[in-house]
Image (cartoon, rainbow, N blue to C red; front, side):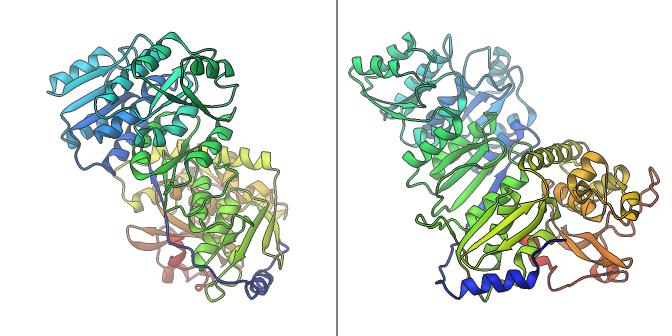
Length: 568
């Protein structure tokens, strides 16, 4: 049982509220653009930002080692006011050909040689009546130079960004700025300024170059070569992708309106989104397992997430929503300025999702601050509740202690998310209604999980039984684990769901409330799973039933578990 109680949480927060002024936090948004794979994500990014486009920039999305020919294309797409779509090397995926048709495109620009986009793809486009221009060279350096020369046809080159041609993260982090300033990206071979790049710098009469990355990325002798050519050199430092990305946001991101967030492990989603980031004045933030940028995020109007839950997790999305709800950070204190129940809820949920040890705040609106908000977040979101205990100080901080080590937490959350993604890819179809999706999730959990009655009877329930990991990975759990797994899979499927904690069957019990096709439905996967377990038997007595129906044998505080929280 947690050491902190609702009344203590409320009293401690209220004591601090009385001591500080109230500051309004403006409304903001977090939007995810994704699909079943990188190609559908690319098409959906285009659909959400272009009604029509005469021009399309087409890049290879196959493999994660073919990025170099594409990275120079954002500036071209910006000048053409064109989306960047992805294709397979040897054929055009159906959703991409459909999107090109929907755009009513006339001109297609292929980035790279036949090794990355085959002649078969080029010929198929020509046979469909499109005008096709291939921008390529003998290698990645010549291709980048060729794209740069094409850009110059539309507008004088603003400047050159120079970085390694072997790691995409350094160029990718800069692409939104590169695109809108009509700069171009050129590459080194890692050791020196190669002949091709040096030649194009001369042909384009470049007089200033910004090197992307520290000396471990682009060695200092490249600076010397450039200066000998009479070129002014600047460098944005950082010898790891995250350090560099942080530095470029600090250096070039002072006037951005928001962030574009994508995986730093694969290039495809961020490439498709780079042109939208440039057009929308967003900085690019590439991440690995979580959003780990040690910097202030002030006055953000929007955050765009590119890619599905396998590349940017639900926990990261929740954390980003917390950033958006509290984007007015105090530079002096680093504390959150909160106003309203939703701000508090989202910020605390984000902190717990990201397994923060401490949550700092400066103020709140007392009239909107509900009693026991921390407990409410934990009770309604058991899929993120790994908290053993917490304490609230009267100086504006909430400290969390977790049931598992940070290493264990990371492993459990990642494995649960990976398992959920794998399952959903098999049981969820694009044309399903929300009710049909919820039923598929319900059926999977009931069919594949087993209630850990032995541990329950012995009063020795393992901590993992309370988690989505227990149900999805171990295959066993108790009611909180069942509700956690449903919450996680529902959120991944675009269904709004919270857990409800109350009493049933003479004891404490947890089940789910979800918004399904515009109506509230209650789901109790635990009670629909027979005990002892009977393989293949699924009960629907507690699937998508009304509040009055489930109230016949379930009791809960209906003021604390309302449909309003489904929008948090």
